Image (cartoon, one colour):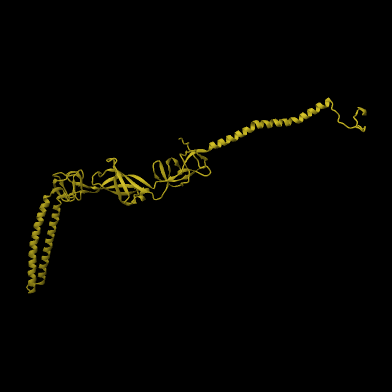
Length: 413
């Protein structure tokens, strides 16, 4: 290439210009540029793929993790402990017994000449139930009365003799010793008279026992004698169904009801506590009464308090020996809370409930159970009214497990 072919400036000097590449030079440089651009293009493609596929998958994975975490939260129902009733009707079995009852025995020996009261007969105090013939006793009484007459005669003679000897002693007609002997003999005869009179009184008292009488107003519930039966004093009558007992009398216008109150409720039962009774014989009818007395001691075997209830039974509706249901209205000494029975968990370490904490987790608490109301139980210790107690917790529920309270059901109008 010659100088004349170069372009010149206006002043005639030659200017320097880039040489135009030849076709061969242009292909090499293009290949070099493509080699430099290829990694960038690959990076752009990878970025596009990430934006289109992987990122959404990452979002989907995050959402799945959240769903799994949500599924790990156990959906539960929760209840608030509410105040337990201030009073409770305690239902206990009771035994209806007569206010007084007595077994009547013979106090003298003889034969039953007649009986005047059969079972079911209402009698008054002192009324004759039977008459016992006592021929041997009657003979002894006659003999004793004769002995009294003899003793009176002997004493009269001894007394007059002693008086005479005292008179003669004043004139020195007899010795002092003889006069004292007569006086002593008079005193002995007086003592013999008193003994004979006491024997008559004893036998007369035994003869009075020929009449068997009722000790109080009541009804005859047992008769074990018949006419001609030989009875002995304190022994067995002619009929051997109940040895020694002639009659049995019970006072039924008033009754005693015996109840054994559990130890946990014993402190709430005092004299004057109102009660009422129900029986199967009188459905729909209740008998009002009050607690009359208690043993004031817990039985060491049954762990119960023996309580007696007096019942007016002048109409005779209740029968002694019957079974009755005793309803006692007891007031609680210490206010407590109650929860459903379904909220209790029975674990080896004791009875517990699951309480939802502020952290959204279940926390197991030991509780002390008080009264049983059927579907609810009284909780003496372990929960407060502000707690959320899980109802119907599963046996697999663990302490610290995440829980969530179920949303309340929608109300439909």
